Picture (tube, rainbow, N blue to C red):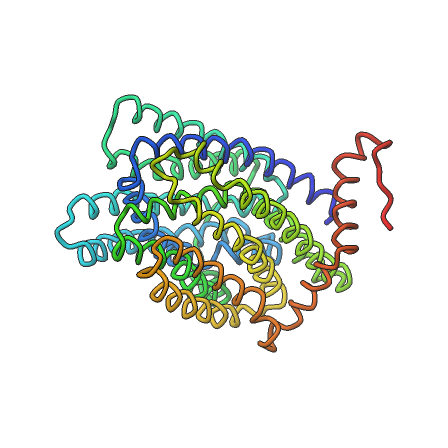
Amino acid sequence: MKSKQVFNNAKWIIVCKIAQSLLQFLVGIISARYLGPSNYGLINYAASVVSFVIPIVKLGFDATLVKELIDKPHKEGEILGTSFTLNFISSILSIFSVFLFASFANAGETATIIVCVLYSLMLLFTVLEMTQFWFQYKLLSKYSSVVMLISYFCVSAYKIFLLITEKSVYWFAVSHSIEYGLIGLLLIIIYFRLDGQKLSFSKSTAKEMLSRSKYYIVASLLVVVFQNIGVVLLSNLSGYDETGYYTSALMSATVVQFVYTAITDSYRPLILTAKKESNEDYEKNVSGLYGIIVYTSLAQSIVFALFAKLIISILYGADFMPAVPVLRILVWFAPFSFMGTVRNIWLLAEEKQKELWKINLFGVVINTVSNAILIPKVGACGAAIAAFITQFLMNFVLGFVYKPIRKNNELMIKGLNPKFAFNEFISIWNMFVAEKFPKLKIKNK
């Protein structure tokens, strides 16, 4: 697999994701202004509750499906069909679990229970969305990217209709179900149009897939816990207003996250394939990904920290100004969060998935304790500080003291070498720009 193919694949993802994320962000801001901090906080509380069961719905296949397809291309129809069947069963059970949790944790709060259940309906459609990993594996992400963009346009139109007609918060709760439903349906149609193999279920394949993905189920669940425990505690300890401030700051801090996601998704097959062919190229690709991700996210963090007040003022208005100090803290957790994404690819390539749940358990403990101490004292800012502490300790510090993943940190340090990272940026520049404009080519030093 040539790196040029990977970056061409990434271009499709990035371009469509830019349009998609800008549209989502703009409509999200308008919706937040319309709903106000309280109802906006309620929607995000429901999102956090549902997110706790998403790892169970996906069964870890979102981390392993590309590798399964690379290892057994002759069984791609069986692998996808088996994934769909298992994911569908787990989605039904998960929706019921959301209802039980909301009924217990928010007893007597009818509106909260209804919003949580309506939001959870999206789980039914995340099953078909797993097809996107087949497009990643085939380096055909231009199809999945365009499909997602079309779906976002439709959902945005739906939300604008809700704003114009002044619908209640319940209508907003089902918007994600519409989005995932359209994405899943269109991806399946294109899959068959591109002569994808007939889908089928195999009990033996299910056992094999679960044996490799089981580590990611617990690990992903632990990630969700430490990512959302702050929102849940904020909602119950400080109210939905504080949740609204925190989630608006988080949305602002992660507005360009799609760029990093596109880059890592495109690097994943390159790294996994290089592991089988050349250890030198494999390690270089891992280090290169670290350098690109960390330095670009640090640059973003500096800009967002300096202009936090202006960003919140323009995007959310005066009602959300308490989110400014929250944003100034949250922007610094991003580089360390993306370090964890790269490390997880390395763990998969090294077949060290069993270490992931231990790493994430460490993160859960740190995050839960930090939130429990800080939220009662400083509210949303406390949740932001806890998020930063967790990502820094879990994705950076831990790798130096925990021996099984120490090698990953060696590759990380190599990638953070300014000279190495600069050369990686030059390589990408020459691949994207200089290929069309030879005079702009830069020589690697």
